[in-house]
Length: 334
Image 1 (cartoon, rainbow, N blue to C red):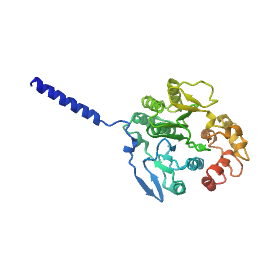
Image 2: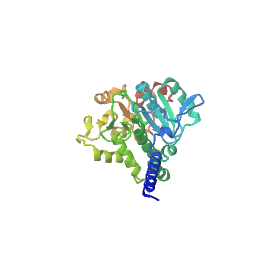
Image 3: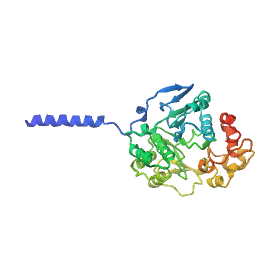
Image 4: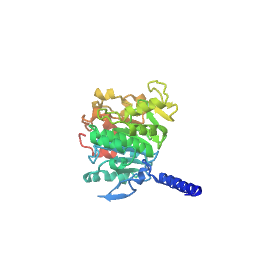
C-alpha cells in the first residue's frame, strides 16, 4: 500500500467512525420518540397515552404511581382544583394504571376541563435505555417504598425533559401559578417544584440520581436528600429560615417561602388540625392563607382521618370552593 493510498484509507476510516458515533442514539432522547402521540377512545373518555405537545413549562402535572388505576376523592379534588385555576394552561395527570371502572368517573373531567389530560405511562418504557434505566431496575427489584420511589424518579425525569410545575396529589391549589418562574420551596421538599426543561439545577439532580447507588432503606434518598445535596453544592442561600423569597445565587432558581404552598405546618396536622371545624378557610392564620398559592395536606398524617360532610373541616371547605364537581359527588364520609 502506497503512502497516498494509506492516507486515503485512514481518512475514510475516520469519516466512517465519525458517522457511526453521530448515529448512536442519545440515551436520554426526547421521550416523545418513545411513547408515540396517539389518543385512544375507551368508554367515552380520551386517554392520552403520550404527552404530545401538552407538557411544557406552563403545564401543571401530578403523578399517581401506585398502579391501582384510580384516584381517591381527595386526590381527585387536587386535580380538579388545578384544572380550574390553571385554565387554559395544561394540567396533566400521569397514572401508571387506569382501570376501566374508573373511566366513567373521569369522563366529566375531560368534557368540562379541556385543559386536563390523563396520561397512562409505563415507567419501564419511560426509563428504558435512558440514564435512569439501571436505577429503575434496582428500585423495581429492591424497593420497600416502590410507589414513592417510582414517583420520585418520574417527576425529575419529566421536569428535565419538559419542565413545568409538579405537585404531589395531596396538594390543592388556591391560586393560579402562571406568574411563578422556576422555584423550589425553601425547605427543599420535592413535592412542589417548578423548572424549565433542562434547567441547570434539575439536570444536576437528574444526573446525581442516575449515578446514585440505590438504598432501599432510605425513604427520601431519591427526593429531598438528593435535592438538598445538589442545592447545597451549587446554590448560595442566606440561611434566613425561609422567611422571604430568595433568588438562589449561581443556580437561577427562586426559593419560595415554605408557607407559599405549606401554610399549615406538619406539626399542626399531627396535632389534630385536620379534625377541627372552621366557618371559612381564612379563619385559620388569615395573614398567611391570603398569600398562599396552595395547601399541602400531608397525606401520611391525614389519610386515615375521615372527613365528614358539613362538619367544616379544612379539606371540606376547600373542596366546596375549589373542586365543586368532586365535592358534589362526595359521600358523607370521605
